[in-house]
Image (cartoon, rainbow, N blue to C red; front, side):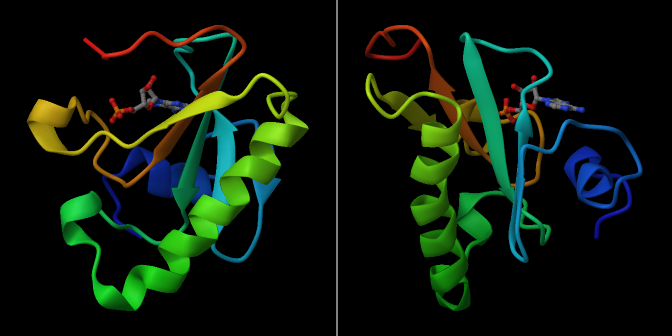
Length: 115
Ligand code: AMP
């Protein structure tokens, strides 16, 4: 738990979010400023600032996140048409919240390349 981290506060229930999935290692909740009809954030409960801070000991956790995302996406109705998964890292990646999170975006066609 990092005390000035908004996502740690969501994990801790210090600030509200509509938690749509939770297990021992991750939680998922809708993005407060959705960029698509469905926009879900999937985050590790443990505070990891970004992908550059992930270590080999986190391999199981990262694998767990990746295998959980399609289940969450299916629950959100995205299984048939698909979805986009994005991890923004540091400034050039456009990261604004410094607690590792995967964006799951769907409900419309996603253009490529991103801006
Ligand atoms: P990023 O720019 O990749 O760091 O993404 C951070 C995301 O967190 C943005 O899409 C924000 O809209 C979202 N966000 C920030 N605060 C909250 C919050 N309290 N609840 C849900 N989503 C949030």
